[in-house]
Length: 207
Image 1: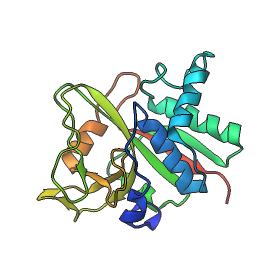
Image 2: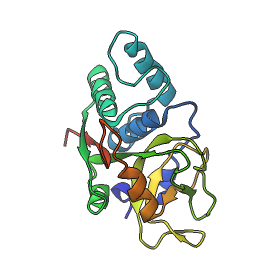
Image 3: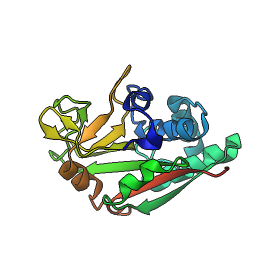
């Protein structure tokens, strides 16, 4: 099952190698492209939100740094208002057992945020390869668009059913994937003021 029934290659084509702490902005602009066909530059949007922060409109923790899920919602609504776009967003605590159902909704794009403790980063694999692209030893978080759920998918010999549009690679033809256990643990991390299973759903508001 893939997002909006698109091919993995088409979804993977949205991936580029991010610069700086901009994963949330990549997820948001990918959502806009999937829902509305609108193309925005994630770096320009990041800079715009930094300037707004200096006017005490706090849509990220500090300029150049993290964006919480609730701040992602505010950014999406800001973009919709300032560009007159038919899109909105909501924040909720998702359920991994029903999360794949969102993939079939052509008016929605699910954005998930993972969090982990030092030396506990969840492995994330590119395509069918078993090389871990998230081998950091630091505490951190990362935002991606959920793009696929396939219980038959493997990365090397590992079962990796969860697939994501992830801004870690240019010229990609495959998504990034996670095991079920690793995804559930990192997505379920109960970060204070955020809570477990943070899910932002971008939604198209016109027919």
